[in-house]
Amino acid sequence: MKTTHYSPSELEVSFSRILASLRKEIESKLEGVEIINLARTPSENNPELKFSLKDLDGDLHEVVVRVTQLPDK
Image 1 (spheres, rainbow, N blue to C red):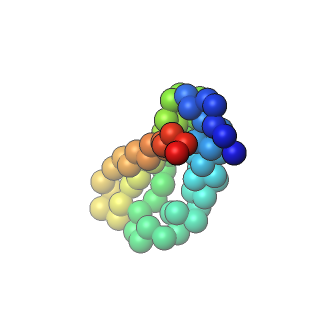
Image 2 (tube, rainbow, N blue to C red; image 1 turned 90 degrees about the vertical axis):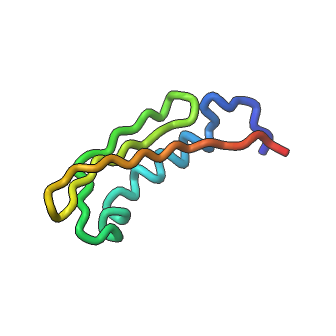
């Protein structure tokens, strides 16, 4: 597949959508951490997913995942 558009690419958008759909599976593997919110920015260059988390102590944390496709070789 030849990628002609990278801002964002179809693969970047697909990967971000798939990762977002795995929210429950990701949460089940994070011991003692609850995902309280998941914000997506799928239409921007390098889509981002911002996971808002709450641990057993009630502390809030954020983890940001940026999806980037490297240029075709």
